[in-house]
Length: 133
Image 1 (tube, rainbow, N blue to C red):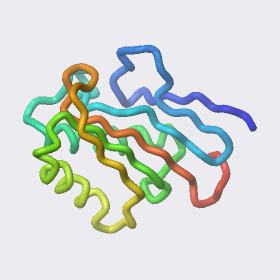
Image 2: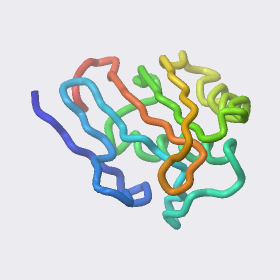
Image 3: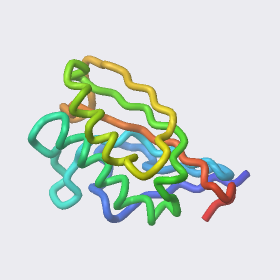
C-alpha cells in the first residue's frame, strides 16, 4: 500500500519534525494536535476549554486538505495535564458530536505536553468509502 504524507497550509507549521497526517490505504492518522492559533503559531490562552475548542477548530480547517470528514473519525486519543478539569474538555467534545456519532476515545492524564499545552488530541480516520481521496 502506498503511504501519503500530508500537511495543511491552513494550520500553523509544525514546530518539530513530524508529519501532520499519514494515510496508508484507507486509514489516516493525525499527529497529536495542540491548540495553536493558525495565524500566530502561538498556543491560545484561556485554559482547557478554549484550547480544546481550538484543536477542533484546527481539525476542521485541515480536514479538507486531508480529504477527510468528521463522520470518518473512528478514534481519538486525548491527553491533558489538568485531568481535574476534564468536564470542560468534555463539554467541547459533546458540542463537536452533537449531530454525529462520536468515535471511540481514550483520555489520559499526563504531567507535561509540548509547548506547555493543557490538551493534546490525536485522531484516526477511516473514510466510509474505504478508499483514499
